[in-house]
Image (cartoon, rainbow, N blue to C red; front, side):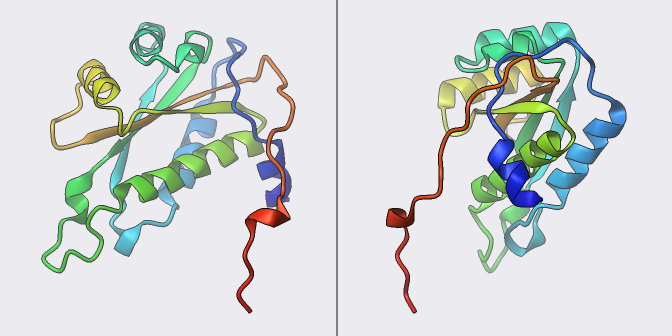
Length: 172
């Protein structure tokens, strides 16, 4: 079943105006928070945006997030690099991988519930990071990692990608 969800998930850029329920939002956030992270540092927090004015503003300031003009929901993932600062330096700097895992869990949970989503990267683009941080009032020690547009799909894009044996090296 999980592989089928992975196979059917697509980046959706057109949404119906149907609101996403609080129950659905909580399920996606729970999925994100269950993601693996270096030494269980959980270097993230989430901003849930349903306010139309803010969705439109984010669509304007992010060059590749125009789909937020139709999406009823955006979840912004904010990285917390300081959570990975330790005296032994063991998990330091892994927050991009950890936030990427949280993002993927949101995308898969959305698909499992019949919702569409689109991952719009913010990090590491300095101009976009600055604009999103200003719009969402993100403190300087936190990093806007990505914006995820979510909602009822108003398009059905064709599958992309496939299993490619030639990209695999087996060491047995």
